[in-house]
Length: 176
Image 1: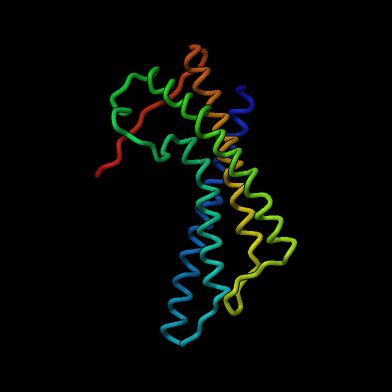
Image 2: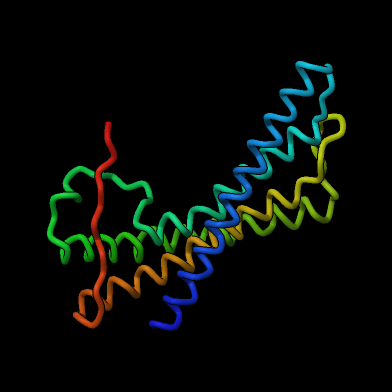
């Protein structure tokens, strides 16, 4: 279990770095597009689509890292004030009963969507638009990575509940 946890944490860390660079690239392309459009009346649908491809990839690649850092979205009604063992049990049940099954379902259902786009050489209906299968591929890959990191998080909770490992379950409630 520990080897798998270390491997997935490293993969998620790498995905987080990739997400950071994808967001930076999307921002730079967005600024470049806006500058060219307003200064020289030059625009391209392909560059607009590259922006949202990069943003989509950043979301899907960054999600496993957020899960690893315990910074994912949750319904925080009472969670923040609970004891660590209770938090670990809630996390374990949520991962096992909701996160992992949901990731498996989305991965299973998204593959035909990706394969069809690839087989049909689907492109954007916009003039100068890009092929669509690469961004559609981000869906099963992203959910697959979240599922794999979710399994690592499940193992971490099991180790914590058994008393064989430490786990930082600190959760900082978002400011509203």
